[in-house]
Image (tube, rainbow, N blue to C red; front, side, top):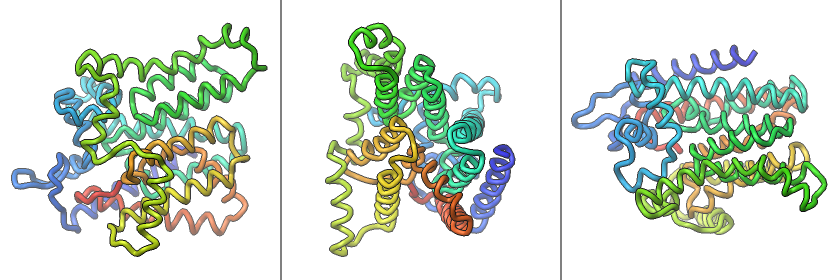
Length: 363
């Protein structure tokens, strides 16, 4: 079933974006995947727009610019390791890695949801995820699919109380994305809530959860040895117009700007709408999912919102897996609503994906 869903969706996405690239005008955004004075349009390169170009450059040349350190190393490192399988072609390697990782994510996510809920809820959840407006990023030259795979592996092991394996998957996730820190919280919460609290039990078993910290520690030590700044992945965020703030202030500033009619790009309204929607769904469905997954799903919203902007939030929300499970479970109760929701969401995805490959900023 999952193979069929993935194949149908992936072929459809390719046809829509490829035909769109032939029919629609492209813009020069100055990036690796766009057209330019000395660059002809290439469909496959267009899948590495914006952040994808930085991942490609890191995979090819390593970390050169200070701003690059905001991009965590596991995805480009994996591309470098696997490139020998594809005649050292970094572009093909990255795209294959993203697509394979996303398929594996869907398979494990389906099994995890089916095990806890039902096959019907699992299918509904997967369909909701695949049709989400920004899911195309999971098969682009981005680290999204790798992070999703490591995240669902973590929760799959947590559901079986295999804390050491969950911690190791978390460690790898922390080498993939900054929001991997949210997984550390989820692992330790799940660990401490799994037995009757006592200092003796903690001392005896804490070693099972400690490896969750390894990934972030390794990257921090690398940055300290090279730049004398173990938190360069945070300080380099300023190069991307991000600064430390509290999520409430960030969200309320967007709401206020909307209420007073301040002129803003359409993307800002879209970012705010999806962010608020996810927060409301999580709060309303708090009893539908495990506490550890709820905490993680909330943190992967609040952490990006703590940078003073909601830019890219529609893409970051892909990691809030609990929301998709909540929506998927509710949609099994309303068959007509789910068809309408999936159709509308898929149509928006087609529009956004086509804009993305023609050079426009989406998320």
